Image (cartoon, rainbow, N blue to C red; front, side, top):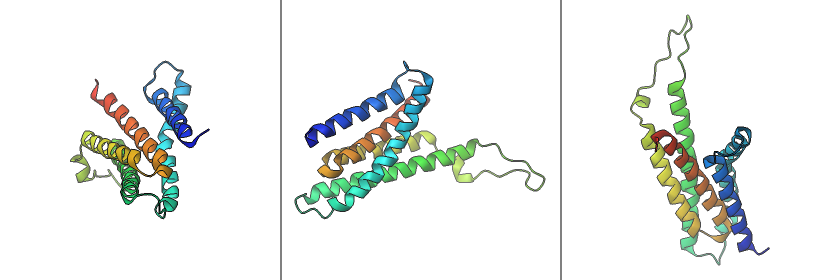
Length: 169
């Protein structure tokens, strides 16, 4: 199979996996849960693969400087978006944990800056960074194009799915 055709087949397979994992309601809940966990792990795995392949891409002579810059921008935005998502999840799950009451510590006080943080604004910001990474990944070098674009696409789909569930469209 030619490399470009193989990339298209892999991309279509990942798009179908994301569609069935996030947006399909016609499967058994066990299968949908396994697909959802797989889709959640994909951006992390694809980002690591993209960074590992970036080492060889940055030293290539035949790749233009613009494509290298766009590939680096895509990898950096993917990493930033993943870090923001993990931070948002940790911060907002901390807010939902019930405070532990013990004789030594009557209550754990809330952190003040968490009360001023808006979850929807954080999610829309992460979505915008993911879409920027998708555009940069599509225009990036050939060796990392698939990893960067698919990682951004999967991450943007996860965020979009969460935004749509919360906004009750």
